[in-house]
Length: 222
Ligand SMILES: C[S@@+](CC[C@H](N)C(=O)[O-])C[C@H]1O[C@@H](n2cnc3c(N)ncnc32)[C@H](O)[C@@H]1O
Image 1: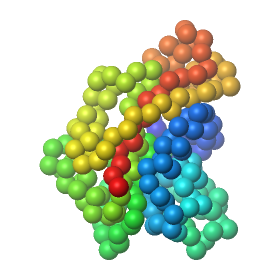
Image 2: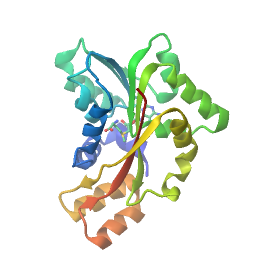
Image 3: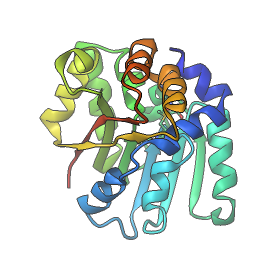
Image 4: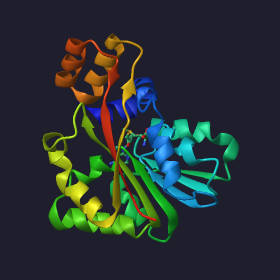
């Protein structure tokens, strides 16, 4: 699966897929209940189309949005164009975040379904140092990652285990369901095939379902 190709070239496919995620709105409810967001400054990394941004946008004072995909960032720039004073958009890879924002300290750092792409590239001290540098950018953290589709077992999270363990050693972890509800089995097979691969797509087809269970973890402090 080439997610980066989709994020850089297939806005429509990503939009459809993410619109179907978390149909019960568990993520929004959980995020807003973590602490009071009122009047705070937020750095959101890997913003995509600003789905998660929309959850807290009205409450906060200022948001800085980053993504390495030009089309995602352009989408957000246009979506929030009437709120120019409140939003800064910055084309920036996660690898550049510590350097790019070292002179600032945000109230909250948010990243949803995105930092894992960067963290999986690092191991041992390099991973620990990278996360420590991110921790210097803000007072509070809300880091959200998918930890299972159909399951929440070790085999699914194994490639990310070191990253998740570091998060758990610094932050509190909450596990929620963010299940997808597609319009039909065919739609579920198509989009889950694109994002999660053929094994999961075949399972959906075989089970003839349009609701696909997904487990999400939220690591936070404050
Ligand atoms: C699954 S989407 C999540 C988007 C949004 N946070 C949401 O929850 O809907 C992942 C996003 O992270 C961005 N991304 C992936 N790897 C990145 C990296 N190394 N640096 C910056 N952005 C990255 C992609 O371009 C994409 O917009």
